[in-house]
Amino acid sequence: MTLTLPTPAQPLRIGTRGSPLALAQAHETRDRLAAAFDLAPEAFEVVVIRTTGDDRAMIAADRPLKEIGNKGLFTREIEERLASGGIDLAVHSMKDMPTEQPAGLILDTYLPREDVRDAFISPGHAGMHALPEGTVVGTSSLRRRAQLLNRRPDLQVVEFRGNVQTRLKKLEDGVAAATFLAMAGLRRMDMTDIPMTAMSPDDMLPAVAQGAIGIERRTDDSRAAEMLAAIHDASTATQLAAERAFLAALDGSCETPIAGLAELDGTQMRLRGEILSPDGRTAHAGERSGPAADGPAMGRDLAQALLAEAGPGFFAWRG
Ligand SMILES: NCc1[nH]cc(CCC(=O)O)c1CC(=O)O
Image (cartoon, rainbow, N blue to C red; front, side, top):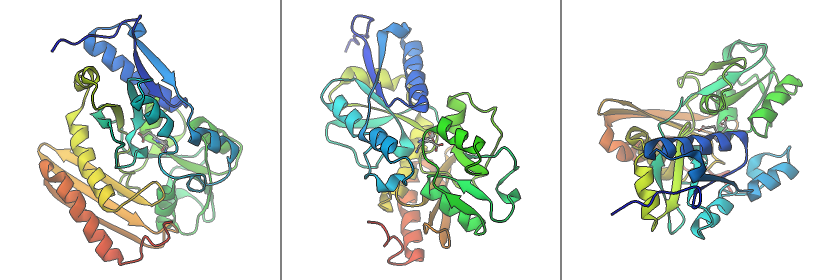
């Protein structure tokens, strides 16, 4: 098979949302492909796609994300455009992607994973444990809210939505004294000079697939498959296979406080997972270790164990 590479006249079209983080991730994808095939940046076109999620989030800026729509809200239009041939690739944060895949599309290429940890961000305080009693912390993440309240039930949590820039502005304006963001996003946007400390996964286990970028293509597009193979990171794929099997076995979505992290040491894997009640009062955590190739089985096994420990009805609040 001979690969017909894209040219400035017939560029490879990369679809993405328009937030600064999404654009940084699309540009990283483009730059890695350009380097792998020695192509000029003009051989690629970055296509910004507005999603229902972006529109609704703008209108209902103070409401929790889970109230304004279900999963796929921020990706549906992008996947439709990909399926209909309007773009050739779609770049996603894997943390935001459901575990099922629309027919005709495949999402199995991952860039090397960034820092998986959460960052604690506060102009005035050194870390989660140093916050005075009653301090107001902003976050839109059900997981971070539940984990924080589990460790620090005395704190107050307020809804904190918007892109990274918006959230930092809210901190500046004093809406909250601290917030959390993914280290990966800050690094990818070159924003590590803000006042922050990386959280140990022992204090705050990250979201499943945090820090991982996935690139989606049409199942029948062999050129895309061949080009993506050149930038794929196998270690990230091994980690995500375990973490996403854990998530899928919990039937989890972004509406459920779930955390999971697989770490590799040579051929061995350590997989940690946690499920929490939204108020943080109850948490069930566990881990598995074994050969990395058994990651998906470890993920399913850990999920079953945590579900059994939590008992029936633990996820009952889910609509
Ligand atoms: N849900 C929003 C989202 N999706 C991916 C990232 C960060 C990048 C990543 O985790 O890969 C963020 C923002 C954040 O959590 O700070």
